[in-house]
Image 1 (tube, rainbow, N blue to C red):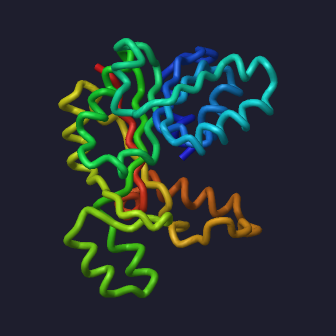
Image 2 (image 1 turned 180 degrees about the vertical axis):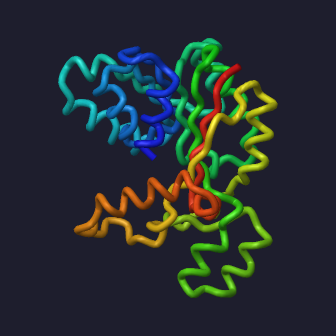
Image 3 (image 1 turned 60 degrees about the horizontal axis):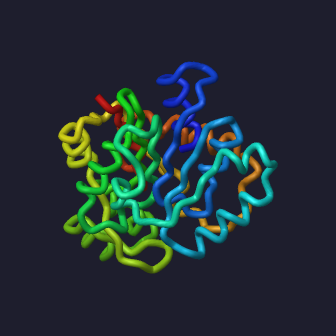
Length: 233
């Protein structure tokens, strides 16, 4: 997904432009720090105290110049209007957050309002059109059958959360003035990989295969996650 995001940034903004970035649900700050290291000004919004502590700890190990480009705010992604003025950012990230929100449309609309004209909205969501794939490939046939008739699933943390369909998010983005520009599949061949396992020796080949599949039909349509990029009118 990192390569996909970089591709969108390089294709939309001029070379060397320092972007104003909002990372909603920044977690431990992985993306925020990566973008700050290449010169962007990043604001991270997070409400989980453990994640905030981890992000601050990671930030403390960075050089002064990078630390000065990152601001961490405690808050809920649904309250962006409380913290920021409309049009304040060139790039808004919301990765792995929508699945925890019962009604995503107001959140996504609020994120779009934060974008300056021509700004990029990057969403990473669970693919509601492929919920049967993981249990099916795991040999859980009953789970696969039931997944066809639901939009919820149990994630790796043991929490019941929701998924989104490409069609509905495409409609949502069009309706809020940030129509879908492009989309990718994420975790097509690696969704069953064990967390924390050692990467295979052929990791670069694996990443190349994932990258190719993530932008190629019909493979991207059965990805575990969808990476959607909308552009503000």
